[in-house]
Length: 291
Image 1 (cartoon, helix red, strand yellow):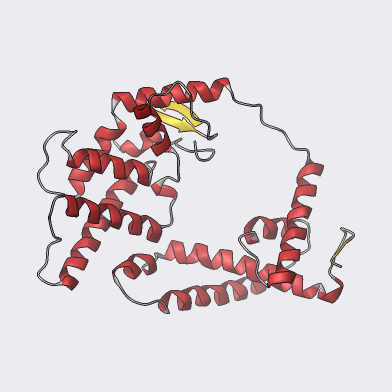
Image 2 (image 1 turned 45 degrees about the horizontal axis):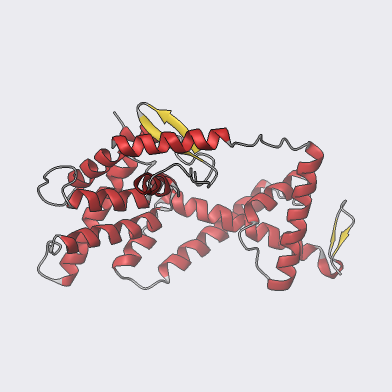
């Protein structure tokens, strides 16, 4: 069975919410710690807040796992396999990638904080004896951590607290959503005029501009701008310096390259649209003008 499914709703709405699935406690969104929690219980709950490793960018996840592996080997006073620094670095890469693959298969809902704590606990034999530090060892540590009775009870207590203080969700009208979309577009446009950059708003703003008909592209134009974006993403990655950390950061799979290229292509499309407005700075049908 894929144990990762036991926590499939972890952080579904953000940093922290509350459910219990298949015997495993899961934390809900809303960052408000239950005041009745003990110090140990608070530690369990806070560790569950954060981005799931299954949702992290692969390179970032591998870099943080590399730190955990290095920490573990240092505590064990154990050097990576290999006679040279190059061979030892390769050993570090291999074991980190194997651990990452196991986490993605069995525990994609776990956070980096939870991995760190479970490894530290395991090295101190809180989960029994272990023989060597490897993928199976880390798997055992995390499984025992997630199934810890005190942890599960702490998260259930936190969830009851959150549910008791949960505010009803606001339902936005179509007009309100449209107004918020226009405000985002204006903000993005003003930022572009002053800085020349889009700054992380290309996705939502782009979709709004397309939906409203501000950005109109043929299929051929979309393919052409995506191709240019993909080349730029690849060129940027190849320009970085090669080292043990770079090997994790740069070895992006096709899906990662595709995602980054699509995001860049959307930003490029927005820039082209903003440039087309000229110096008058008028967004059609909005009455909006940049002074």
